[in-house]
Length: 354
Image (cartoon, rainbow, N blue to C red; front, side, top):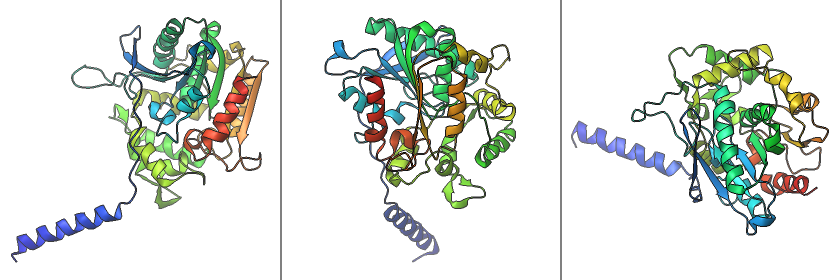
């Protein structure tokens, strides 16, 4: 055998061994309903997906699910066993997954549309959420909706509600807070990495699922520790989440959030709107779902948010073994951990039926 042939044979054997060793196969995501399209006043096309109940006339106010800013809507419908959207719809709720600009089926920056990832957090508040809520209100022939958001997607919902409280009859937050009331080591690592970015237009969040986490060990990625922690996860579901649900984040959004982290604030990019002060204008019923092991917004940050809200009807539920649940939940686990559908979905339905 010639040296060239030997090298080729070794390469093929190495590839075969690697393929055999890779035993985790992400579950294909389920088919979604046909997208409802809406366009923002600044011209971005957004995708909405309605999961209709069997009896829509009895469903009550539409429930709009907003992903975190680095995700798409698959976080609410990863597979048939891990789908908060389908569970709530099966229980009779009118559920809509709404994707913001740059997420999932919504319009994304590309060479053919001349879009750039140059928006700030305020674009979600001023353009995306108004278009989403107006479209759902019109299609449901109702006056108000219930907003539900994950992480910073929920934070965007809180900012939107301050200016349009009459359009929202309730809010549910999954791992949501108004500000980073205390920084942990993971926050500081992210800030340090953000300071090193100069020429990026968007943060490639998928790399966080691969990059080893400093000071923790090379056997776990940064996102494993920050987002997918907790003992109630199967590894193949984590991998499916990384494959199907992560999206890049505009560098302007990332830097704005970085400013909040450094300064303990929650404000528009130009400093003209103090979203933190505006929380007192939110008076609708509020439910905060917090995870005992959430490394993005811990339960203490959720409690601080509740104190700032103007609502008289506000509840925080911490999902932990201490409170009688099967596990301590982390940030993504609130939606996708093994018992999240039964434990967290069940609690939400109880809250909605009060």
